[in-house]
Structure formats: C-alpha cells, structure tokens
Image 1 (tube, rainbow, N blue to C red):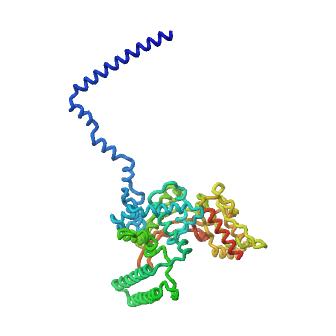
Image 2 (tube, rainbow, N blue to C red):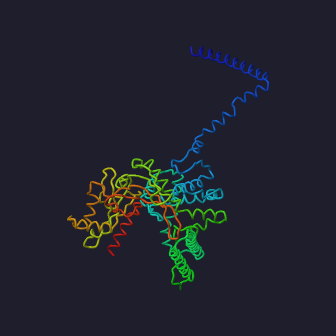
Amino acid sequence: MKRKYRNQSHKNRKTRIISVLKKQKQKQKKQKMTPKKHKQKKQKMTPKKHKQKKQKMTPKQKKQNKTLRINSRGQTGYTKNDRYINELNELLKLVYRGKIDDIFNDDDHILETSGYLEKGITRAKTLLQQKNLLLDVGCNSVCMMIAMISWFIHQKSKLNISEKIFIFCVEYLSKEDELEEANIGLPESYAKLKLDKEMEHIQSYYDKKLEAGASARDLKRAQKNIDKTKVKHENILSGYGRETSTVENLDIDLCNEVDCTYIYEDDMKTAEMKKSVSTLCKYMNEIFKGSILKCFEDLLGAELKKYVTGFNSDEQIMGDIDEQIMVDIDVQDILFDTEAVILPPSQSYQEGMDEDGYIEEWVYLCISNSRKIEKVSLDRLKTNTYYMVAKIDEEFMDSSYEQSKHGGESHTNIGAYIDELIMGSKDSIFGKLNHVAISERKLGNGTSVPNIDEIFTGDMNEIIEHWFVASSTTIDDMCVDMSFRLIE
C-alpha cells in the first residue's frame, strides 16, 4: 500500500508541476501584450498626497506641535538645533512672568551645536551619581524646592529639557566647594571688569534718579555712594595679586556674571562662543530660577499633584511681576513621601557624650511605611541611597527650649526636649509650605531682578533651617565631623 501511495503521489506531483509551468507561460505572454503606459499607471496608484498626510501624523511632529502647560509661556515647537535656545528663552519668560523679550537668538545656537550645553549636562549627570554626593547650591532662597526637585530628578532615568537645564545650573553652582578647596581668587583682569560693571550700575542708578527729578538729598546720597565705591575699587586694584597688599583678592562669586565667564573661560575660544556664553552667564541666576519654577510646577502636576490648591496672581502686592503659586504642602508629608533624614543639632550630640568623651553618631530617620520618625544609628542608612536632608535650626531650638521651661514643661535636657518634639508629637510640627512668591527684588545698585521665595506657615515652621540632598556616605561624614568638633 505504501508503494502504491508513493507512486500516486509522484503522479500527482508531476501533474501539478505541468499545471504551474503552463500558468507561468500564460503570465509571460500576457505581460508582453501589456503596453508600457499601463505599467506606469500601476506604479502611480499610491498618490503622493496620501503619503504626505501620513507623514504629518507622525508622533515626533505631533510632539512638536504641543504647547507647554504654563500660560505665560509660548509655543514650544522645538527643532533639533534650537530646542535649548527656545527653552532658555521660555524659562526667562516664566520667571519674569512674560515681561521680557527673547534674550537668546539664532546666533546663540552655537551653545547647542558646539556641544557646550550637553557637556555641562553630562557633567551634572556624573555629579548626581557620586557616592559622596552633596547638592547644596547657593544663589537662591528656595532650598526646600531645590531639594525636592533634585531628589525626584535623581529617581528618573530620562529627563525632560527643563530638568536638563536645571541640573546644568546645579552643576555650575556646585563648584563653590571645589573653588574654596583650591583657594582660587578672581584674576586681576576679571576683577577690574567686575568692579567696572559694578560702577556702571551705580552710575546708572544715579543718572535715573537725576532724570526722575529726585530730591537734592537723594542725589547727594547717591553721589556719596559713587565716591565711596571709587575709593574702595582703587584700594582693591592698587595692590591686586601682590603679597604685600593689605587688601585680599576678590573671591569667586558664582552668582556674578563676570565670575561665571571666568569659570567658563576655556569654552570661549571664538568670538561667537564668548558672546553667547557671556549672555548665558548674565542671565544664569534667572535661568536657574525659571527652571526651578518649571520643574516644581511639573512636580505639582505629577508626584505632588495632591498638594495643589490653586494659582493666584496679584499685581498690587510688591511689584509689577508679583504672583503666587498657592500650594498646601505639609513639610512632614514631604519627609515621608521621599527618603529623608533630619540632622540632629549639636546640642543633642553634646548631651549624648559619655564619660570617656565618646559620641555615638545618629540621625532622625523618616520611615515612610509607618509614617514615624525614629532615632537611628548611621548604619541604619541604606548604602548608595540619596536622601532629602533637613537641618534643624539650633538657635531656634535653644529659644524654644527656654520657652518650654518658662511654660512649666519639664525635660531632662534640651536633647530630650528635641526628641519629644520631633518623634513624640502626633501632629506635624514642621509647618506647611503655603505658597511660592514670585516678586521683583531691587538690588543695592538700583537694578531689579525677579526673585522667588518659599512662604511657610505654622507655629514652628522655623524648626528647619536648611534643606539639601546628600548620599548616605556624605551624611555619615557630616555626623562624624560634628562629633569630632564637639570632642575637640
């Protein structure tokens, strides 16, 4: 039966082959009979317009057509070559509340095409991964907001453009410790330029008063300031950089635009780069403030959405750009919603010293699951973990402790009082972040800059003096240093 099946199969296979060959011959004959024009027509069956329509609907182009959430900002149709320049302008408009024109233009694309900005962002990413990380930057009065943004950014694998500019600014402002350790002062040429700019601002302030018809008393005071500043500048420059000079060289101030250009001196190889980097340095502080606002508003739209209570604009409060972002953030909630520790004051360490002068270092650890604050030894901190750190105000604690004694409360010592206050209270004693104020601040030289402040409420909202982000290794080092200072 098998052989018969195989023969039958072979016969069927042969029949199928003959049939296929016949069909192929008929197809070839038909193709020869088909005119060329008909062939061309077939190729044009898919209209070009249809292809273009599909291209317009690609996700990349859809993304370019989107606008940012913030009303005071404009369109954000970024291209590959201008996305950073557009974002820098938008962040400035955000902090100036739209009352400023574009600062960066087509000539400033070199900041991006040269790789200058990307290099800074790469350095910032490296900084954020350091085992001994300490993010505690100056030029601001919103340390809690910066700490929150930095901590949440550290949890992300991919950053948006505003977050990249934020960490670019943070990396620049984090150079302070490095400069202090190197004991580097401002070179004489930059010091002269810095003093000249200061004099320009003071003279401009006087000229404006004169044009406005200020009183003779005000003009006399302004002129006195000019004369005093001239003498000070002459004394500084007379022996600048010389060992015999009685006047110290100017320290580098990262908040100053001239000092900033010195820091980035090596990047300004061409006239184009020098112009663009100088513009960036001039507005670095305001760009940083704009990135803080943008990143914070992004957090309020995501991780901190439950804390938003509203947005209020009131131009009558302090100036023509005064606004308030209304929130209702309990400081204790932030401590529990992140990885956080509270650094104890030196009084607590001192009272914990034994007879041999030994201090066992510890911190207050905020436990998310139980929403409790516990006093733990440093080995309880997770390795390679980054914490939001709240530093207790020691002077405030001294004052609060004295008031408690006058009020009839009895505690063994101030350390016991602080323990009960931080760990024993069922209610939050840290106060609330009520709103973020955006206002115009006038400097001593007569110029005005936008400023942002954190406004806290609560009976004991001053209990936390400062906020920053640090790794467990850095926290360990800080606590050990504090105990060594007390022992000495």
